[in-house]
Image 1 (cartoon, rainbow, N blue to C red):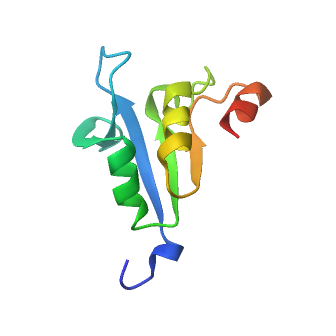
Image 2 (cartoon, one colour):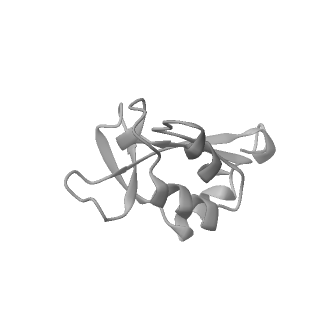
Amino acid sequence: VDQIGKDRLVLDLSCRRKVGDTTGPYFVVTDRWQTYTDVEVNEETLKMLGGYCAEFLVHGVENEGKRCGILEDLVQLLGKYSPVPVTYAGGVQGLDDLDRVK
């Protein structure tokens, strides 16, 4: 951040729930979405990470590439708490999904 400035940095967050947990929190995952970190995606984390970048690129891992619909609760969380603009990727099935992401 010191070398390029926060205004030129997009932070990519791959977000996934723990296997078998359909209502719990989302966590940041790494290593081709196989390794869970201890970083929970919530208001506190988004505000902290938002201090280091100009934008988030967020992958809804569970639905990425499946065209089965967006992860609405994740999109709502991002819309409510992200201090920076967010580009969401994951599961868009049609124009109705795009309207909901706006």
